[in-house]
Image (cartoon, rainbow, N blue to C red; front, side, top):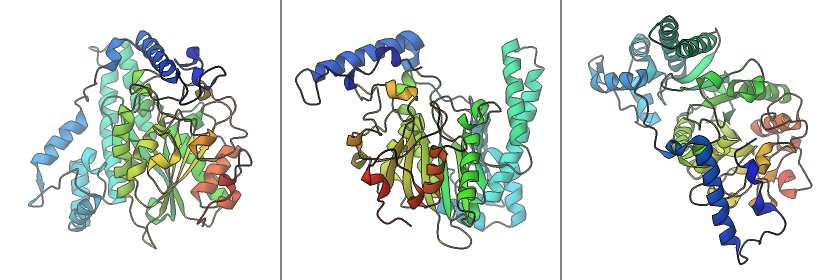
Length: 419
């Protein structure tokens, strides 16, 4: 249950003035004050302070990269466009590319525009180094018992990510950590699905053994398998994208747009760097945004590349917009929420920077409503044999005729330009 749930949802209850009626401004002000009080009382006043980015191995790697050179040439700006990065690597031999990845794994592994296989190789090297670091910390008597235990957890996570066949597209062990993983062949995909997760996403929650479909890896793997089952002839790839700093817990950060704004920049960089296929045009892309991930997608929407055709949100607290048209994108907007998802109790508001705006499943928002039948709770949308997962796969593969609606909403069943 959220910190908001104790407040209920007074803006949607009977007896509350409708939008534009006298007293609604006072109601919203009072609600905002109540929400702030609950959040600050629960998470502490220090939660509203800006958190400084932890100095860590990637910061050191970037510093060395910026000061370094390779094969007698300066290294490109790591923030350069993917096309410029691609041109730089095209000028290197295969042996030089491998050497650069080995020397700067935490830079090359996260570099949009670098060859995919080289990024996978670089991140494998970075994971080996991170695993060995945590293994040493497990025996470091200067750490507390809790510190050594956490080192053991991280070490086992990195060992799992090092298993043969895993395609790690991004990796940064700094602080709580970030990562992204590819399922399928991204280089030859006709359609690419990107799973954008929400609160409490970090390296330790990137994948789970219990409740596996509540974690980014389980979500993306489940979606990729369902897409292959639904349309086996379609070349698809799915990315578990946990490469942004998600809010930790349901505190002030989760109620604000700061983490979403930073995440939106990173999400758009990923999308702009997706490679053209080796056998045809650039793939079409669908975003599947869960919980706070839908806030990230909402903020990113107005700058999405044209390759993004669909945005599907589930368990959304809002997209920081009053309606779908305000998102500023030509992508189709889809929304679903199952009947026992606690997110329905969150006040859909935006007052003083708190809250994420209108409810995407409200008729007035203008999204196409999707059936979530079979999903249970806030994290059940990617579980096999649910209507929610089948709908995601239909959207991801462009099989719009197979989408099942939550109601008789004509916007769901009629999709202009469906392919």
